[in-house]
Structures are given as structure tokens and as C-alpha cells.
Image 1 (cartoon, rainbow, N blue to C red):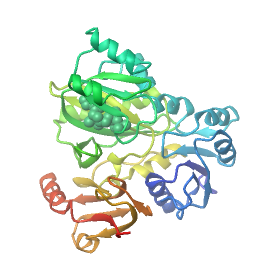
Image 2: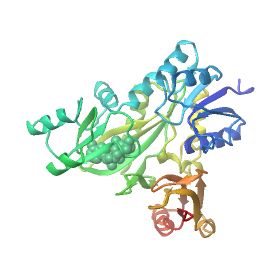
Image 3: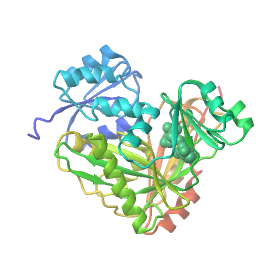
Image 4: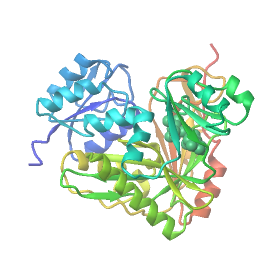
Amino acid sequence: MFYPPLKIGLLGGGQLGKMLCQAAADWHLDIAVLDPTPDAPAARLCREFVVGDFRDYETVLAFGQRSDVLTVEIEQVNVQALYALERAGKTVHPHARALEIIQDKGKQKVFYAENGIPTAAFELFKDEEALLRAVRSGRWRLPLVQKTRTAGYDGRGVAVLRTPEDLETKRLSGPCVVEAFVPVRTEIAVIAARNPADEVVVFPPVEMDFHPEANLVEMLLCPARLSPLEAAEAEVLAERVVRAFDLCGLLAVEMFLTQDGRLLVNEVAPRPHNSGHHTIEAAATSQFQQHLRAICGLPLGDTSLRMPAAMLNVLGAPDFFGPARYEGVEALLAEPGVYLHLYGKHTTAPFRKMGHITVTAPTLEEVMAKARRIRDQVRVVSLPQ
Ligand SMILES: Nc1ncnc2c1ncn2[C@@H]1O[C@H](COP(=O)(O)OP(=O)(O)O)[C@@H](O)[C@H]1O
Ligand SMILES: [Mg+2]
């Protein structure tokens, strides 16, 4: 029954949580949010906001007991509490086992290997000494990519080691997964959605351009510049991955298209994703509404693209820390086909995600030209102290 609506519990109240709440408002769905930050972006948009740590067992257990469906906008939540809630008969989407695998880049890679999902060659190491021995013995060669197994976020847990000097100065400590360095032609993401009736749909592939210094996605383009065959293969692969995880909700599948034309899965996120923000304005269904449809057992929405789009992250300017001030907003809002989203984070920091801008136009060429022209128009700074 659609009404009264299910009580949705959401772990995490950042910008993804805020945009989920915005989508939920269209149908007046009932969302409660758990986040440790009292003025988190989602705080003012939900029916109930609970201040608490989503990494803490007791907190998640108590919060989850009060919802019909529990979901996440961040992976780093207490999975033991989710297992306990599942045993008690609660609906948890994505399920605890999928989250447990996805939280750990090592377990993720093993999962791909076991399920025949193409991914870069890899090996798990218990510490950096073991990695050094493997390189010295010639079993692993440079360049290689080292990733910490847990708690890597926005590029901070990833080191590309190209030279013996990098191996000395840039290597990361702790348990890690080491991957062959992939010669990438294009990085893409495909967001899939699955509901409890085992329906699966995928959004058109998006192309990701990286900021060289911050290692964050700087511009995203949809449709990705792929051949029709490559795009179809990427969509089929994303569908295979979401079915392998057997989860309900969104699954964003980050992939590499290699220089020799192979598709490899890099990593996944079982929630709304940066690479789907353009769907709010540019697709028939937004990724946020799609996630709600999927976890509430509703029919999945049309994923077709209405018009080409780019997404730009609005990042905190380098060297500014403190209460956020936005420069250039008025000029930006005067542009047609430009949509600004500000997340409402109180303080800025260098490269912190403060908002995003979606740019639309009749052709991808026009979208890219407009995105390049406006990309530096909004600056997030802080008043001098
Ligand atoms: N095996 C690889 N070969 C080449 N580049 C890689 C490889 N793995 C990761 N990268 C690069 O590093 C970026 C971040 O790695 P990723 O595993 O996606 O971590 P994060 O959690 O920071 O998103 C990727 O988007 C890609 O640009
Ligand atoms: Mg990534």
C-alpha cells in the first residue's frame, strides 16, 4: 500500500541524503535521518533528524528498529547492527552482506573475481612490508595502484606508484589491495537500480573527468563519448554486477574502458552517486527518486536522458577554511540551462564538495563549451578571520 507511506530510515545526512529527502517530498514519503552533525545538509528536509553516529552499533540498532525500510547514503555504517536488524525481520536495502563487501576494497575485488566480473588484476597484502617484498622479488612490477582496504574516501586511500621513489615516499600503510595499473581510455560510471521484484534498469553511461590535484571528479558528461556497442556493453555489465550483489536500490558501477577496448569494473557504490546528479534535470527519472522506488518496492522509473548534460562539482577554493561564502552565484543564475545546487554546508575547506552545477544544452558539444565557460564562475571562499 502506498499510503500511509513506509517509514524510511536513512543512515547519513550529507548532500546525497539531502537530495533523497528532496525527491521523497514529491510523494510526501516519510524519512528519518541519522547523522552525527546537527546541521548536516539533510537536517532541515526530513520528518525527523536524529543526531548520532551511524558507525555505532547501538545507535544504528535503535534507529533501525523504528523504520520499515532502512537505507544508506554512505557505505561506512555499522554493518553488524544491520545484520542484527535483518535477523529481527527488518528490511535493509542495500543488505548488510553487500555493504560489508563494498566497505572493503579487498573484499570487493575478491567478489568480482569469484563472480566472473572483469576487473584489474590484484592481490591483497597484509601490510606495506609484504608489498615491498613482492616488488623486490619481481612478482609485482611498477607502475601499480595501491589502495587501503577500508576508509579510503575521495581518493585519499589510493596511491599510484610509478617509480621506485614513489614506492618509498607515496606508499600507504596498513592492509591494502594492489592492482595492476590500467591504461585507461575513458573512466565511466553506470548507475543500475534493482527492486525486490528483481526488475533492473540502468541509466545511460556517464564519462568522468578527474581533477588532477584533488583526485575528485571535476566534470561529468552524459552521454559518455562511447560507441553504441561500448555503451551497450557497459550497461549489460552494470546489470550483471547489481544482480551478482543481489541488492535492492541503486548501485553505481565505476568502470574503466581500457585503451585496448576492454571494460573493467573499478569499484561500486550502493547508493546515489556523484555520477548521477545530472539525472535531476536531464533524465526522465532522477537517481534519487529511482533509489526510493527501488527500496520501497515500487516500479522503477524511465532512465532515458532528456538532453545532454554535464555536472560540475562546486569545490571549496584552495587556501580557504571557515564559514562558506559564495561568489559569482548571481551571474551563474542568469545563464539558461544551468542549474545550481548548494548543499548548505556551513564551513568550506580546500576541495570540499559544497555543491554542484548541472549544465544542459541541445548537443554535447554545446554542453561542454558552456561548462568550460562557467566552470570557474562560482567560487567558495571564506571571509578573512
Ligand atoms: N587499477 C587502476 N589503474 C589505473 N587507475 C586507477 C586504478 N584504480 C584506480 N585508479 C584511479 O584512481 C581513482 C580513484 O580510485 P578508486 O578506487 O575509484 O578510489 P576512490 O574511492 O577514491 O574513488 C580512479 O577513479 C582512477 O582514476
Ligand atoms: Mg572511485
